Image (cartoon, rainbow, N blue to C red; front, side, top):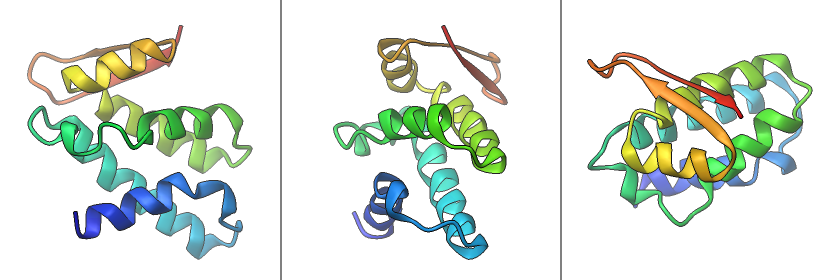
Amino acid sequence: PGCLGIFVEVVLGWEMLEEPQEQLVKLKACLWAVGHVYASESEAVLLDGFGVVQTIVKMVESTSVLSLKGTCFYILGLVSQSRLGRYILRSLGWESTFSSDGAMGICLPS
């Protein structure tokens, strides 16, 4: 699906990226893009089946780059705003909650 496919490709290939600042910025930008897609009930299904959430969980659990780890926590909070996102997170052993106005989601490992 156009740009979305590129964003997913960057996120899924995160382990192959080197750590120079500009590559880290590119990865974070792609994370924000897919996170906002997952936050939408109607759009989350576009990414279902690619393993994006699983990759982000792996990223947050294994990276030593603190700014990337923090970004991943924010992104998982976005993911938790949709039913599909909460279902995937729960299946991966993560608990989530979100505000009723949809302004904020919080997600932590169980």
